[in-house]
Amino acid sequence: MTRVFASNANSGTAYVAKSRHRQDDFRPFLYRTSDYGATWTSLANNLPDRTINVIFEDYKNPELLFVGSDAGVYVTIDGGVHWFSMKGTMPTVPVTDLTIQPRESDLVLGTYGRGIWITNIAVLRELNDSVLNEDVHFFPVQPRSRRNEGAVGNYRLLGDRQLATPNEPNGLALIYYLKEPAKEKVTLTVSAAGGTTVRTLEGSGKAGINRAVLPLGGFNFQQTADGDSRPRPPAEAREIAPGDYEVTLKIGEKQLTQKAQVLP
Image 1: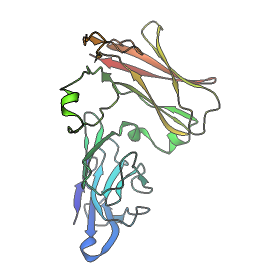
Image 2: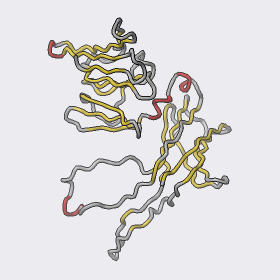
Image 3: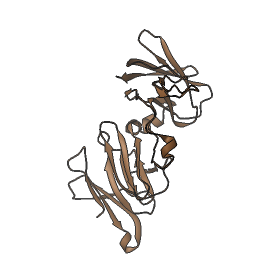
Image 4: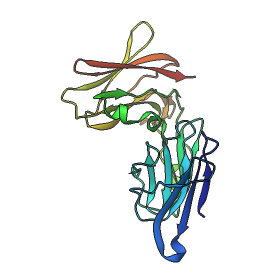
């Protein structure tokens, strides 16, 4: 048996993943019981013919499941009826373990030989057939605090020998869904209390899930010609102060709003 996972939501529900790769059988074996093990239902459905290493049920939405297999990571939003690849920029590599960080809603993947990969899955918790049938859907904005960034160490001395991976964007992620490609410009307007416009962003009009990032500003160490390397705010954005804001997504005559919060 590869993995047994007890449901986070229902006491009588559990999942079992079984590997037979040592018998040269690479089919996906994945089962769920909802009656304390009396009966079992296969959830393999459209999963590829590769060994499943791990199964995980979301803490908040029991219909949201993730599996790690020798072909990568797969997700279902309907309890295993349909599975979709979650590849992104990750190469096709065996996923040997995964978990969800409850506070940040981050899916953390452990791979065989390609390190650890992390992505936020908060949007997937809200994604369902009802949302997918809407022309436009604006997802709730997760609160974020501004991250102070600066140079660390001596790049000229160390060169590329030090492992470095990109951080998540230093800003608020504004995520929305379009059923069809937008025929008009997509804008996202951020307003403070009283209706004062703080920033206006232009978003993508592609069909599917789109994301725009509202930079919160900060200080970067930028060395000038005279050698002065005091921290300066980036030229392209002013710092956005902690507080409550409202974000308006506008496509033609259609407008949707969400609350946003910048944490201290």
